[in-house]
Length: 225
Ligand code: SF4
View 1 (tube, rainbow, N blue to C red):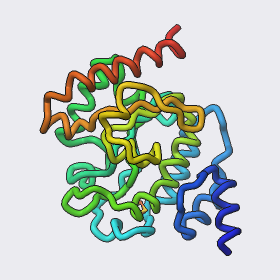
View 2 (view 1 turned 90 degrees about the vertical axis):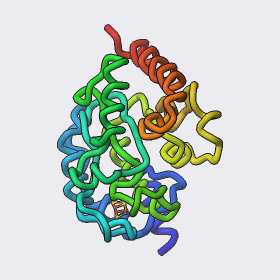
View 3 (view 1 turned 90 degrees about the horizontal axis):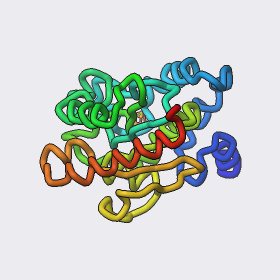
């Protein structure tokens, strides 16, 4: 049984992430291969398949499952740690004060929400906005990994320590991860501060600005006409 689960995990491109076995059949049953050039339908199918997920304790307190938002064909995905109160109520990522700041950060580098995708490591709000726990992230990570695989973006921008450490599978502090690109299966990963942290510690805004400028610079090298 264990070997079969490991095999399924490899087939799904989930690497070494520890995935609860109950997550695998749901992902495997999906036909997500329809149109490699347009991830819209595949992302919608993935949403339908996982929106009622009960794979970890966080489903117990959720109002709304927060799948992600934006353009499924974007070349940049921004990844936070998980929904907060406003996101849980509205079912969309980054809609509270931190979300408004993210919109400003995006605008400062010439993006809006229709040009990028925004998601989270976990899809249900942790009680009291605590950090997600390791087993909750392990349970939910296959969904984000599948979203990334379907979108196939060139860039991933991790917002905050929790998202960065989870995606890059490291314990290195954020201050040492930011400011440069990391490789994740051929994608360029940039790490910067979470907008909620910037609301509390405005002194990090300068570094964030430098990070997102770097993102835009690299993006333009690949995609500017
Ligand atoms: S946080 Fe993720 S794994 Fe946990 S119940 Fe929600 S969707 Fe499922």
